[in-house]
Length: 265
View 1 (tube, rainbow, N blue to C red):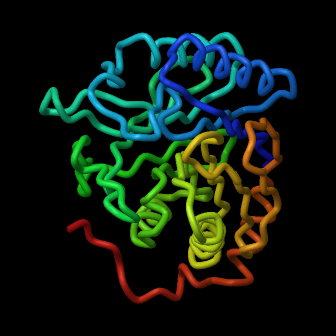
View 2 (view 1 turned 180 degrees about the horizontal axis):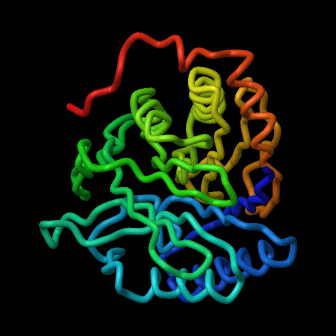
View 3 (view 1 turned 180 degrees about the vertical axis):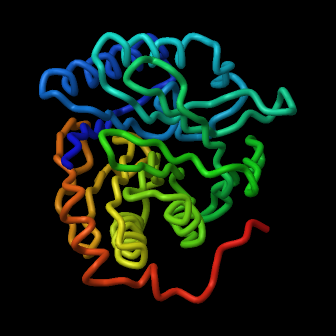
């Protein structure tokens, strides 16, 4: 079982039509090589490196998710994309990742649990956190199961383990990983750690541009980096081999040997 995935490291701005143009280009690139899944970064609908707020939010029935659905239907590629949805308080929207299947149907939504209150940032001043007890978002594409978390969640191993407990073979991490000293090193190290400890594939797809790091990654279940992009926009396609993943889990049965389970707080 092999699944072809296109990762789109995009530069995202506050200009929504411009963002849709680059996303449309990413869908066309995915379709041209027969990809079954396209992964877009966090906040792919619109972004401000100084902070995302209610001006970036729109309902799941709104323009951007409807656009993703139409592109998925037109190209036959499922998509996982970061966006911003309204929260329970109109002043505090939700950082969300939406999964759309190849038929354009919404397969699920993940609302980011761990808000980025670190390294001088205060995401919780603007955004509402997701419910840590909500069902994990895990979707099937081509016989592999993809579990979704977002950006800062990568620093919390229990987020990844909960997805693997729900059946994920691959961890998909849309991100707008803030730039700064050691940040790319942390990004790479954490992605490798999540892959090794879960014997899982990791697809960590970041934004490129002002204030963010780029360096999107594909990491194998042995922790080896199979692909790493630079700090500029780029679209690349990879083939994920389910047989190699199964072999890795037989060789290193750490998931079977574990003695603790993850319980949401």
